[in-house]
Image 1 (tube, rainbow, N blue to C red):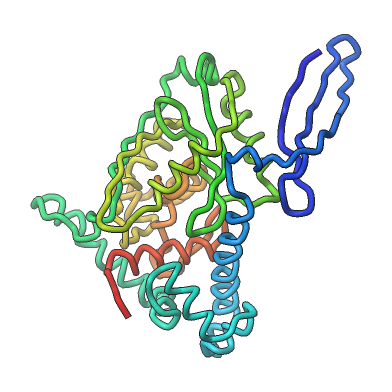
Image 2: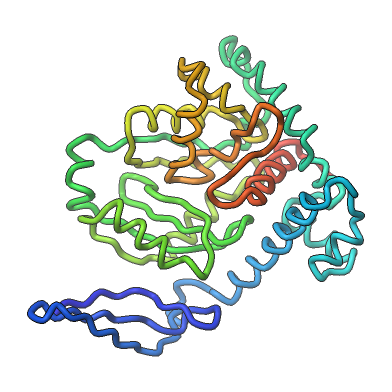
Length: 330
């Protein structure tokens, strides 16, 4: 008999642990549900996580409403009403989340602001060549990327231990998986597709020893999104991909916080000026969101474009980073 444990979600919380018992002789799978208050193990305060995630969901809903009504330019009172908050609480929510007022934040969502980011990035290569440091680099982490060797790719994680879990971040719930060689997966998720994220991890690294460790992941999450007081953490990333994909992902690491590149600019940076579409495909397969900042790549028209974890979240990421790097107080 073989047991395989995973989490089962019901009524918006982790209330059951599913034990799948596989009989090798009959090849039949029996599912036995054992009720268990999983988070009483103090691995994660899910109640607090769920409340904080609701805050981001309101911000995402507000962004979606603004996008849908861009021509009418809805007032702050109207937007607050859409997310079921008073104007006062709407203001407080944004100050807690990003440190600025909703009015100022909305300015970072405009196409004009996106175009300005592209214009600023056009001189960034020159500043690197002459050794100037960008102010936004004060908010960047030190991220290094390592690609698996052909042999490591072939054995699919054999003799490797991967620990995973979920945690809260300013943009909702994130799923992170890490090895002793670095973070190998980071994706935005929610309580409804957590199990899908785990299965995706197992498909990429089928021969690895995969363990749940929410306390480790929560600690990692806090370090990743701690941009206060100029703290720059060091992170090592471990990725599987083609040589071209890895080259594109490495190029994204050079885009500073608070800036944006177009797909054409990224293609040009890797000496493939006509490879914009191939670059877009590689970006879409980025396995480590945020730390490999694919959200900083937008269309050359200033339109934010698609994002595998939602275009509203991409807008929120860009605007949040712009606000943080400009150190605005209002």
